[in-house]
Amino acid sequence: MSENEMNGPNPFEAIFGELEDQFNEALMEKRASIAVSVAGVAGLVYRAAVAEGVPADLAKVFAAEYWEREMHPPVIASAYAFEDQDEDDE
Image 1: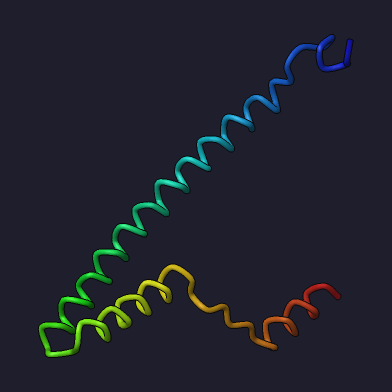
Image 2: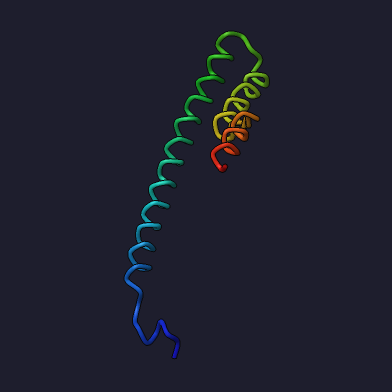
């Protein structure tokens, strides 16, 4: 018989496991909500471009680029950020 089986369930692990599940669910709901909003704006970009006379294929590219930038923003690292971190470590 293992130590966990002899001592019963660890209440600390149970509480934090439940909290982790709740946070993960909330994060998933937030990300889904953001995706729906971004999709709506991407559709607006497409419709506005077409309404202004942009060819539909090009308007799709505009909407796809908007989607990509919002859902996967570029990461910009600054040398200053690394220098500041190094100074804090000393």
